[in-house]
Length: 169
Figure: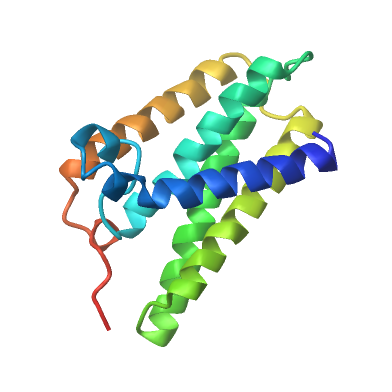
């Protein structure tokens, strides 16, 4: 992907994620909306802001591509996982050091994660890596599992800190 396309992708995914952050409350806490948008302020729910905007963007991008890379699905899934890992790592690291949560840092972490998502996806697409027998099936299964985890754990989260909203200061 060209630099221009990567910049466009960064802004579209970032804007969608920002809008998605508020969509559940705008929907009047609609249960169906909660499957796609964060239902609370937990770290897990905020990972939806990476997952769903990236998937939405990627579907439209893929449909418009003339030469569809064979590693498009693997590159997209891997970059989403990478951005989610960056988000969780940075959030819990700074929170562990400071002992509290700062909205400005959380927002900055989101944009850093999206930047790394775009960069990693672009590098994987250019490298032609992750093209092997059944790679599309393998990464599609990972995608479906993530989707199911988001849907099930939105309303039935495990009793782990990542699923709990942060404590007020």
